[in-house]
Length: 419
Image (tube, rainbow, N blue to C red; front, side, top):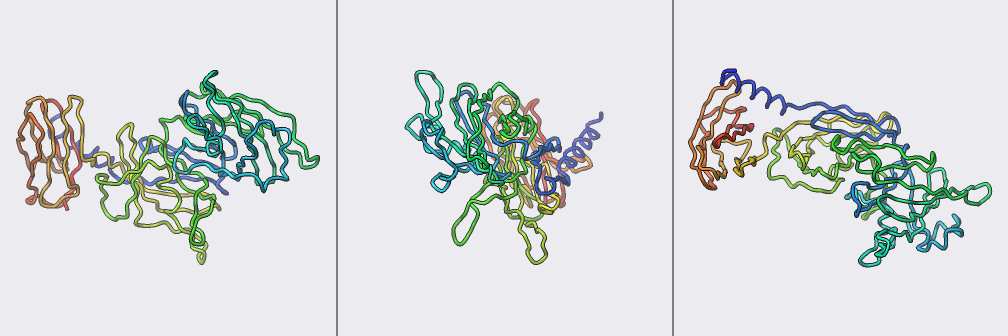
């Protein structure tokens, strides 16, 4: 392919990637589904929300996390801190139990991890590390309360490469507990996923999430501290939680966005629920036209700009957003040989600042091309060191360009917007 034709093809590819994609998803009527979305593939995967009740972190032999499915109305209580009370747990004592909640900021802090076993330095909320057996031994009795006033008591007996637990179900007609059921959920199950899931109702493990590499966002219901009467209250909301390897920046803006100099946060509820608001007079949801989110995959160093466009509520669970790949606008590219290149601002007007590091004494130059592949500016740069240089672009017309940086055989191209 001729050089100019190659540049035109490259430019077309870059600007197509940066084009907005409309994404339509549905959580179903009554939010019956949890939906996982992956930006790089533009694919979503749907799982029935009620298929699971408890989730066990399975990615580490030394780190544990146990979460409840609060989105389907299950409440967790700490009923006792002694296993000896197992036989005498009575639902009539509910008022004396301590309610527990999943963290909505950290996947690895679940409701059970927030229990009272905090013996230093080996307390894990629900149990304590035993140095002799190298296991975590349970100390807390939990009770799960369901929307239909069904109760289950639960004791997590130990952790050793998996979770062993026992549970029983309350029979309202006889005011007694069923016989105990004991299960073990091994970390070796589903090795490409973050959590393993269990359903007490069916007495079986279930798959309730995609492979870890196949999602960035989870559309679900979760408990949060909701503003109420000048304070907060625990309340189940519908919104978005992000992958543990994803960080999010939120911004109020219009027009072209910029993924650089954003405040990226690791909290999984950074997008959360407040990108929409219910209009009681119109009985509809309105989405905030000026709220944008930058979703950065810290493993692949990809960034996508997200903007919600619609949300229909529980009647359908339908929602829409625009997604735009803005990875090419990231300010710095690091090469395998240790060289790096970046520039700012972008969008720009009269001048851009080039920042680069060259360690090989190779020839270094930067060039700007139009979207038709015409070279409109080129400059040879100093080599063998770290430099900043100003590039005058005041003579160029407004619009989209491609900036190309070359250091020896290392080449990178980025989108440049001139306003």
